[in-house]
Each structure stands twice: as structure tokens, then as C-alpha cells.
Image (cartoon, rainbow, N blue to C red; front, side, top):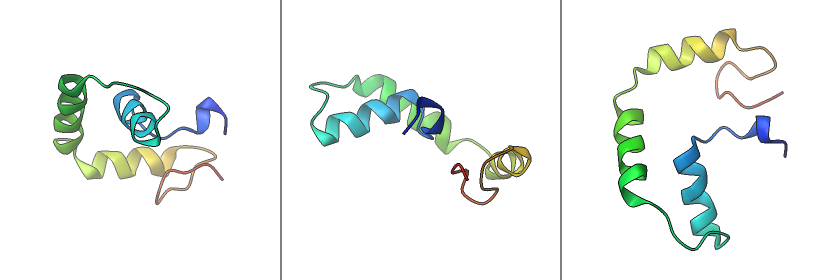
Length: 64
């Protein structure tokens, strides 16, 4: 998988690596802040952004 194909935000990518065992520690404060920001994001804006993105599925955002 290329770096451009990663759909996770930086802190969520770090959490994924931590849970997979490839990272030994995570900054929980940064992760929590990022989760708060994602939680407050309007889904309509996200769907509109995905809909106009080229080479990505408009429903889920994954690369074609």
C-alpha cells in the first residue's frame, strides 16, 4: 500500500500501529484531541469532499 492510499489521520495511523504491535507508545492526548476533532466534523462536508475526489470511491473514500 502506498502512503497516498492511507485513509487514516496521523494519530489514528499511530494508534493502528500501536495495536498491531509495531509501535511501542502513543500520545493519548494527541489522539484524544484528534478524535474530538473528527467527532465534530460535519459528515456532509466529508461526503461532498469524497464525491469530488478523483480516483476514490465517493461512498467510502477508498482508492479505486
